[in-house]
Length: 335
Image (cartoon, rainbow, N blue to C red):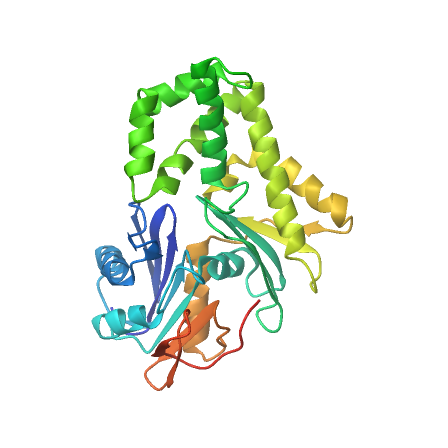
């Protein structure tokens, strides 16, 4: 492959997804393992190695530009420049964009148009932006502090109901208990898996599809969980709409449960913003990353720290996502 190729990388709670374009050719790669972490933060050294492996397995070559949307940015990514230093020479990069996965989801869903995009997978983060002066983040606080309505939240609520049924407490669901047992075994096995794991959110979110199955089979507890998830996502979307036209879209694998989520999500938004308009997503977070890579190569992507970093061979050092020195251009701080 020549260095005219471009790669877009989506790093979410469910793993790594890659889109590559080089002339008329395109390729796709995926690694479904949980994002590597060290002391709670994203382990960028290990992540860089995994990204490189997925890209090279998809299409070996060198690229004019690459963009990576990373879960946990800002907040759990100490130095985005780590990815630039690890990948620049390996792929012969002229430019690398490192952004929060909410940014790549936004671009994937709306192109480069202003609006609000809810990114819901394992977790939830919502971005309302015009990619210029307005940067409104809502939620994205992780499964212990927030991410209300996301996959880990849905899975957790489903497991709560399953364990209530196991104990004989009110509010339980036999349908969810049966699915929990089929997936995880005895409740003590589930306890060991969740509390001993370095990626509890990943395991909790893995039960969300089971909650979806139970809801579609008519279980009222499961249906209430999904209705509340949609309401939570709608509230998050409204909170991010300040200063923007009320255009809303969405992204992330949780929205594969569209029939369970969409009505409560949209009705909650319309309760607060009757003029809200909903635009089905144009593409995925990986598509958005690919578009950012192309735009950055043309010089049309501006940095907005701590949400979006642009690295090139000529850029000076700047503070990283935690305020330390990295490599890249200066940019305006987001909300």
